[in-house]
Image (cartoon, rainbow, N blue to C red; front, side, top):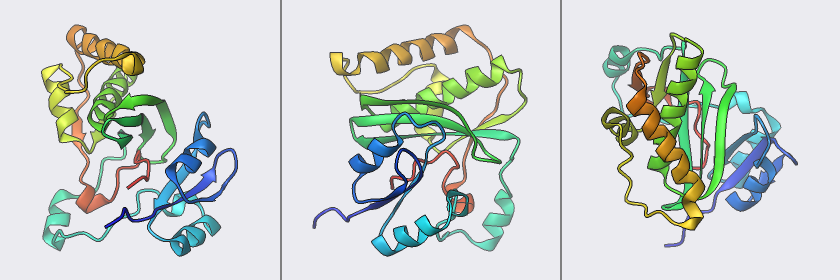
Length: 210
């Protein structure tokens, strides 16, 4: 079976509209601070979304397999927090990562796209970037990520990627080395917490490429 087609809505970018490929979408959002965009499964859904606004769809929940008791037990997310995420078109592929204010979705930082990276590397860098930012600001916020792998790498102070270094990913691995060094030479008190996607929907920093 062929890959299911995707449609991309750009609410805020160089030219807002509905696009039929990630490449077209990326051309509209690259270098645009606070770009607003999301992927949809059908043209009809994308057209309807474009008529509305990004806020109506950001973090929108998918159908949950959790019971009402489970959702009650998990509770609501702590909005005194930042959320981080990464996206990679391929593994490896073009990768970028970012952090946002969980409550408002306001962008706090964004790096990339890098020509060759992996989602796990991006998630790792996003967490460390967020930790460094919160420490610099002496903030008491917590940090949310939806990647258990990246959380374990941060705990071990090691980027355990199998991606081999090359001229194509030199800039990315320079960031990785800086992140590892930061973890080795800094202490921090920010809790890194797993985002409960099944209960709360996609993490607010999600790039909407799924």
